[in-house]
Length: 383
Image (cartoon, rainbow, N blue to C red):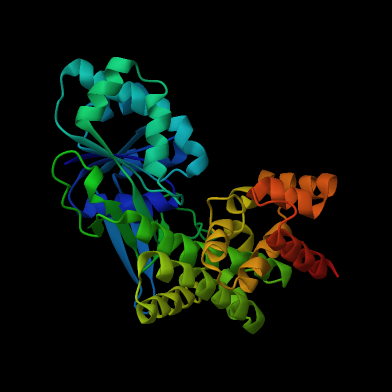
């Protein structure tokens, strides 16, 4: 199995890349970080530190790397069996052109083997969005060919991979938690799905996409935003604060009630899933700053993301949402000198006021009750 993985950052190396390498794929990373590319091509291996109750380090071997915008990447797509990404939602559009060139070249070469492309991003139906971006630059003939031979497979991914620890001089070293989950839509594959341990197939992906979005992502973001409000530095510090934990768990219970209504999840199993997520936030071996987890607040406050989407579910089913409102208000307070979205949020709040700003970002009606509630909490947090 020939695999090309876009994104040689911590998530790419520590999660998806590792699963592909463990499945004995002939794995090439595509990235723009020359230091990482050079190190991968010089060493052809890297260490992954897996932390939890029992810490261990595993070596990923037989890997190489190319620049993600290069002719080498195009040539690899023309010959690959699987292409995966872990680049971040904002970067998908930037790699779409390279993927489109690779598909055109594949067709030109007459390669009719099935190719499956899987975007492993923190977003809903990321591969479907990537497909739209790829097709936007393909000719009509190439589009028709790709519909026949290329599977664009949506997935849900879950593994906490914090940034490299300060002081580490190895550009390839990565630390990950023990838990990982990679669920893919088996209905979207062309040909037989590849045998990759750790990749789970489902024919009801949205149930798992929303379970992860409404639980891990919702809880993680609210922990970060409330943690910053409380002057706490890490996710672990924040979730161990009783006041923060009460709201975070309350929000996950509220969003969980939506999932139970919508997908029929067993209440006791979902309660156990929530407890598992909380224990992951507590992992003493993962040093993850609240500022990093909270970044891109405009995206996280948008209609289809981790704060507003579960809130809309509570409105749909007439369910409580007081803790979700607290999380949304805290997100409006998020500030970071390193995050352009945080600065844009602050400017929007200053220029338009909290009510109009939240309505613009979230798509919620400005005169609606939940916007009023969120703004009231937001204002109370300023005092």
